[in-house]
Length: 406
Image (cartoon, rainbow, N blue to C red; front, side, top):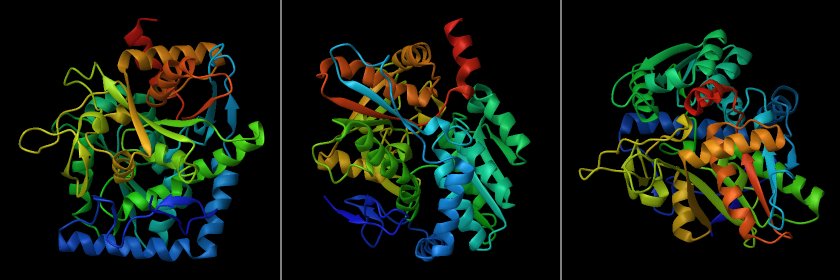
């Protein structure tokens, strides 16, 4: 396993790419020379900032005093099955803006400001990345532009309202399927019109180098905290750590705390949508094939001609046909296991956690809750599963009520 101590605050063990940005055979640089030069500028600035105590001190201060870190680890006793494994939740839903996305958004906007950029732009699916980025831009006095598919705008209107209140320019994207993949394409087109003055803040561990390692570094705070908190509470390590996987940032953030613990099983949970036997899912690592999309090599769901397939998930933040290169590498290396949960299971888990623990999860996070509800009864009472509850469900309440007829 290629693990080293990276130069991020806290000195976490994180997966290290090679000099070209590959994790094994996945990831890598973009081919276009002009774009490659722009991304090298970002990579160099990131390395400089992460080695600069004035940057890292400001980042850690904002995490503590603005974001509200550390987020707690909570023992979900009511959700834990009698005679089965104990379930614990890493409460990223309690962060300012309601999800893990604020972790990398603060880091990226601080970086953009130090680089002298004037405008930050990004894509968003569920809107949590968009809200977090608009929040960071408001805080740090930067212009903000968010591209979002029209399907997701209709589904996630509470987050759309938040972004508008925070002052960002929201760009509806109707091309293609009008979802996350198309929002990424639209944002990239906008970026290429003025890259010298704009900073593209990718919302996950996807895209060409240096984005996967950069977002991983910012999100590794999740695993850093969770490891210490779990040991403090229980005296040992969890049997499994698990997180939902779309692009994969919240999962790699949690995994970072346990990569060097071979006895801790790493589990990613993908959206099975309407079923793995249908075309309406986004189970990339389960059913995808390696190839190049959006400028990096990864597993992705693809058509016969190599074009990304249309994907589906009830959770807008998971409906992406590709996945971060770290997860592709971990899958091939056998270090992580990737499961899936259907829309139906996610809705059931959403309601069960809400009524058992008084915690309303994001539909994205409900997928990993569904996995734990399925897995914990098969395990013994002396075992445990630590879940990353990556976001809260405020944005999903109206959609869930309408869908379930509550």
